[in-house]
Length: 91
Image (cartoon, rainbow, N blue to C red):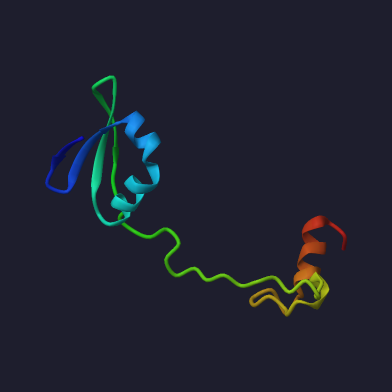
């Protein structure tokens, strides 16, 4: 593995065998050039923005049905079930 400041060159085999360690290094800001038979074929770099930043997880309440959901804002007070019925052509 050759090293330059914050950037390393590794073979595809090393990526395959040490993917967890390499991905942790990428998450910490390091970047890699991946080679295949000694030829550079790809760059592995940290993402500029967290694609999941700002998202929250809300567990589903399995005790409720669509008909129990609150009206959806902006749809004239229709419930989610009424909106789905409309989209299905059930009205």
